[in-house]
Length: 266
Image 1 (cartoon, helix red, strand yellow):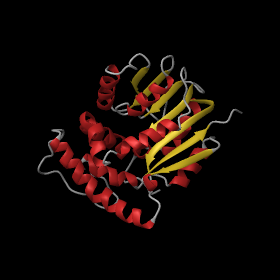
Image 2 (tube, one colour):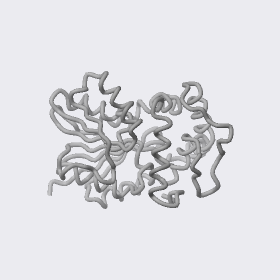
Image 3 (tube, one colour):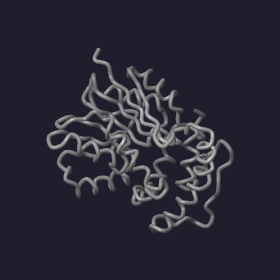
Image 4 (cartoon, one colour):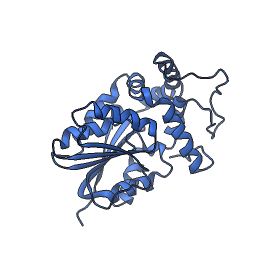
């Protein structure tokens, strides 16, 4: 895991907030386009590992537009509850519209909140999950510690995240796809979906080790991958906050990974 390309945690937080404000309205469709629909397969894998049952409580940390919140709502319905928290008002607005149109509107509550300071008491959720968000927080270990804190003993902390492909050939194909193709697809999809009006003066790639304030949103993805822990490193981070055992499952050859940590009963 490399050092984040920002001068300070506050600079990263402000930049990430701007990124998601810009892409919120078409975030879900753009993700489908850029993953060729594979994100749906990853979400199904997530659903198989939450361990949730009807009547239980779940927390979706950095919930974005509420995709994982709605998946967990199906599992805890009709008497359970799901809370999602996120720092982006724009992403929350999109998520709340989705929830309002769903059959789970009475059990899903999306709120403004910070992954590094969860506004909940200890030991109050059966499953605490996050999806594609760890690379966006300013302190991954602190976020994991907060997730473990609010998880009930015997409950699960589940992290679905882009990761590091295993295999030389897949890695060789994946790196240029993320670094060059994803930003191009992002710009194309944004224009196609009438999302962004990129100014003619929009700068290109940042200088090595830096992310400039005007960097287009989907150029942030390859930059952010540099700070994602490798699979075993994330196991160690989750273990260090008291989760045991911690296991992971590679998805699509390790392009994504699903980590599951159990909070011990004692």
